[in-house]
Amino acid sequence: MSYKEAQKKYAKIGIDTEKVIKDLAAVPISMHCWQGDDVGGFESVGGASNGIQTTGNYPGKATTPEQLMADIEFAMSLIPGKHRVNLHACYGIHEGTVTDRDKLTWKNFKPWVDWAKKNGFKLDFNPTFFSHANVVDGLTLSSPDPKIRKFWIDHGVRCLEIADYFAKELNSTCGINFWCPDGYKDEPSDRLGPRQRMADSLDRIFKKAKYDKKRVIPFLESKLFGIGVESYTVNSHEFVMGYAQSRKILALLDMGHFHLTENVADKISSFLMFFGKVAFHISRPVRWDSDHVIRQNDDLRAAAQEIVKMGPENFIIALDYFDASICRVAAWVLGMRNMQKELMKAMLTPNAQLKALQDAGEFTAQLVLQEEYKNYPFEDVWAEFCKRLGVPAGEEWFKTVQKYEKDVLLKR
Image (tube, rainbow, N blue to C red; front, side):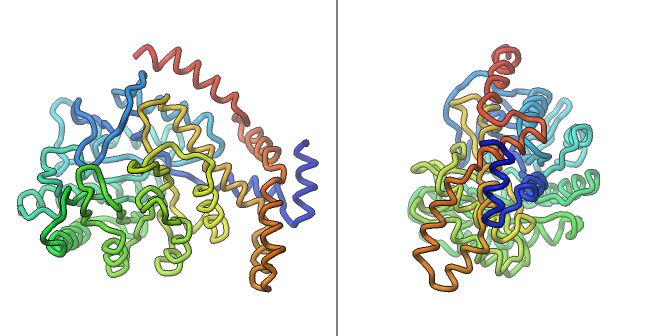
């Protein structure tokens, strides 16, 4: 079927495909830099640790800022639309001696800002509360040691101010995500104390940091458990919800940070009701690991449907996964395009009609149409979308990645 034929078919159910193409092109997704080098960063030769881990040893990993920037640029060239780049603090760029995290400044990220300006990217940010000697007994901001806590509080302050620098220089809001993997491997005797210390530390960060609250958007991320902290995490879902609500910041939903039987998409509407905006990490949990490359599965489809129904403008969408067992650039491109495909499918669904059937109690008609609309010619609209934005529509993008892998990645 051609795009014109698909356009007519969708028009019969009230969907304007031209509007869908325009609307999807306006949805930015923040692409995570850490897929490109297995969450390594530029501070040391050590790998990710303290509650985070990558598996695999596929060749071609970026080992310098220049390589990582080049890989991101190449990946973005195969993804339709204009998107954002999400940085972790461990990706600061250092000349000579490495600046420790409690002393980081905007100068460590000026090369990233210059690069972003050159390529038309906007930046988001994350403090890095892992892979460091000052993660002691699995704790950072919740540590009982005042010196450890002060180090990480100072790091959080520095990161908020760096996020403010990003926002100012790039004339864009900057989302900054606080994920602390603090917790215990075995059952703790005191669950309250670490959470009280965590709340106090976060309060100190937000009070001390100098940043524009209109252009820097902080959020706090929960997790069910982590590597080495299987029995108790300080930043549980309940803690994060309570802290964020009481301090008037956002709580972040990560699709991979809940029990496998939980429907994360079902949580989105409640978050939107009470926070007004939803910070959302797209990932894919498999057993104990939360960060596999996202696929077009039911979980992603359900999340995309909720995002579209409630308005993409109300969401801060970022990807969060890392896989060292496959080509890292291909993982970026595939994940970003999969997210966009599911958003398009949701935009091509007559949600108002289906809602009216639900409200009228016409559940048979609702079920039948929900299923039938899944088989409408989405691929033709997607192909037109890609054509207009100058990227391959089908799997031919992978041939371009394979050439880049041969010419660039495998020569590293």
